[in-house]
Amino acid sequence: MIKLSFALLLCIASITVLGQESAPEKSTPGFLRRIFLPSVDVGYQMNLSDQLKGSVKLAASLEYRIKNNNNFFVRLTYDTYNATYNLEDRNNTSNTIEGTVLFTDLFLAPGYRFGDKTYRMLFSVMPGIKFYQYPTASFDGQGIQISQREESLFTTTFLTTLEYYFDDKSAFTLSAYQNQVWQRTDFWENSGSALGFSFGFITSLK
Image: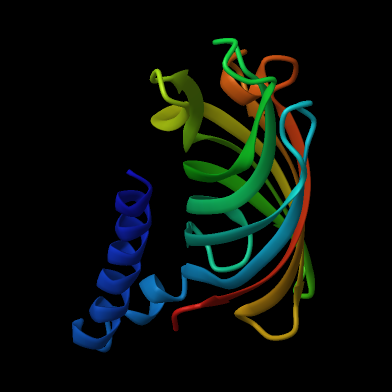
């Protein structure tokens, strides 16, 4: 499912780029100038759950703006990060289960941007799905076996970003966000919240 989500994002980006090459010259510039792709977005996430440690986070997104500069936009975002976990075993097979888990978050959400020619701010409340694997321990008569089960659940992120535009279509970005898992399950039994920040670069296709 994680690979499928990433493939979906790559597919959309590829179709957009191919459309730029094949569409009629007069009809494409206005549309393509409203599509933005952060080529680099790297940050750090502080997980407030006792069972997860902080981790480096990578993000890619595809954004369509209603207007080139300010106003509403729609963004498809793909986030991925590894986190070290420490779980108490409920099957009495061991004291703890430790390891690293890969999380993948997929969001599709609107947002709003405002500002001047150089500095702009954006806000977005993003609903999405978090994909991950959860470890369980069992005793098979000879030893302890650790197995992984595929899981997904609903998550939201509140995002705010400051953008610095060094030309009409390209900017460096500084973002702060709060991610929330609403179910008290698996890694989030005591807290489903996480705080983070990231640095990035964004530019339009045209």
